[in-house]
View 1 (cartoon, rainbow, N blue to C red):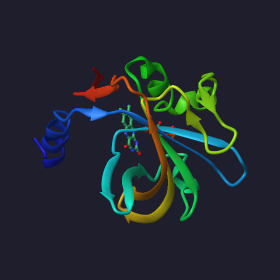
View 2: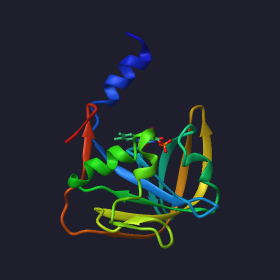
View 3: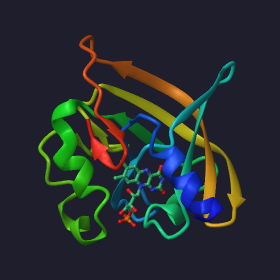
Length: 154
Ligand SMILES: Cc1cc2nc3c(=O)[nH]c(=O)nc-3n(C[C@H](O)[C@H](O)[C@H](O)COP(=O)(O)O)c2cc1C
């Protein structure tokens, strides 16, 4: 097997928490993409990173200083995760009634919402590493995080 095959199989053993990254573009249109690459960086300053494929629609809307939200999903939000990771379901992404799209779009029924401002963009081949400076965050009391392992939700 190739290094890539072995790497892919090794990474499938990780348990990922599933989030939806959401924002508005310059024209005011809402974007959402399912992501598992969210990692906290530090508390001082409060910051996190996400790796976004350059082919994803949200990619070119991520500019220094632009705002986005990381919505950590609940176990019952698998369908929305599928919609936001299926390029053919783009038109359905904001049909869920739990979106608040008045300003930065966020899911009112997520496990957590982490509101960020893009602080740094680092290109790495197919992806851009997006560093977000955290401006606000909230969470629900019950822990029921949607997880993904070996290609399936758990
Ligand atoms: C569980 C899961 C995690 C994902 N994590 C990421 C990620 O961290 N970064 C990324 O660019 N795409 C990730 N994807 C793939 C995108 O969600 C998918 O390619 C999406 O369709 C791209 O957005 P677009 O259809 O708006 O172009 C993930 C997909 C799934 C199902």
